[in-house]
Length: 354
Image (tube, rainbow, N blue to C red; front, side, top):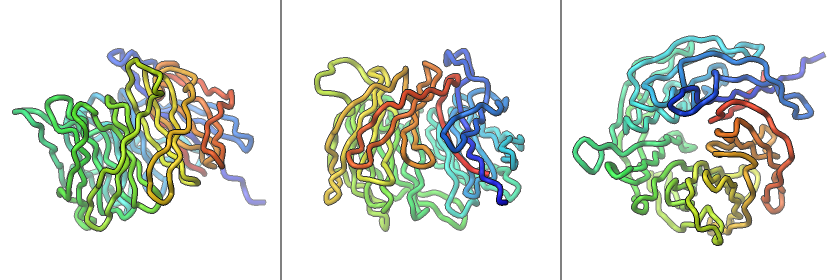
C-alpha cells in the first residue's frame, strides 16, 4: 500500500523584545486529511526567522532574520524536521523577503534598511555562497536608501519586481530588475513611481504574468498594473482603497494576493484589522471591491492560500493566531470558518508535502 503524503506547514515569526514578540523559532505543524493542524516541533534559530521560502524542489528551507543581516538554510528531512545547514552573514540590514531563481541556482534577498537586493548562489547541498551581485537602490537624499520590501520573481524568471517604500529618504517605486539567469547578476530594466508617501510594500502577479497588483502600506490602496514581461515594464492602470469608505481612521495595508483559481484579489489591513476582497474584471484587469471582513485578530501581517486553495490563511502577528477563511468560488467572498491555530507572533506560513 502506498504511503499517504503528509502536509507540513512551517511558520516564521518574530522573537525579539524589540518587536514585542513571543515567537520561539520556526514552528512545524502537520495537517491531516480533515485539515486539522497539530504542532510537531519548533526549530530554534537565530532571532526573527520572519520570512520563509523553499527552494524549487522543496528539499530545503531558507529564512531571513528580520532586523539583522543574516539568512539561514535548513534541509527538510522526510519526516518534516529541519536540519540546520548554515547562517550566512553580511546580507543587507533587515532582510525581509527571499525567493529562489527558476533554475534553483540562486536565492534573491531583499533588505529593507539595506535598500538592496542580493543574489546568492545556491549549492546542491542547499548551502549558500556569498553574493554574486548586490543591487543597491539608492535614496533621494545623501546616505538614503529606497527600503526594498520584496523581490518577487516573475513567471519567466527574467525579472524581479521590487517595491521600495522610500520612507522620506528614498524613492517610492516599483523597480523591475533584469535577472541574468546564467550568472545571477541583476540590472535595472525599469521603474514606476508610486504616490508620494504611499510606501509600496508587496506586489502579486497573475498566473499569465500580464497583470500585477501592488499594496501600498501607508497609501492603504491596491494599484493595478499591466506588466510587459518581454520588456520588464509596469504600466499603472487603476488604484483602489483597501479600507471601507466609512472608515476615517488610520491604516497600514500589509499583504496582497491574487487568487489562482478565480478572478479575485485580496489585501490585508493592520490597525483596521481587516481583509479586503476584490473581483477582477477579466477583460480589463480592473478591481471592483466586494467586501471587508474582520481578520479575527490583531495585525494581519501575512496571508496565504491553503494547499487546496479553498481557504485564506491569515497570520495575526499581535494576537498570536492563524485564522482561516473559506473562499466562495463564485464570488470570492470570505467567510470565517471559526478555526484558530495558536502560534506566537506569526509572520509567514508556507506548505510542503512529504
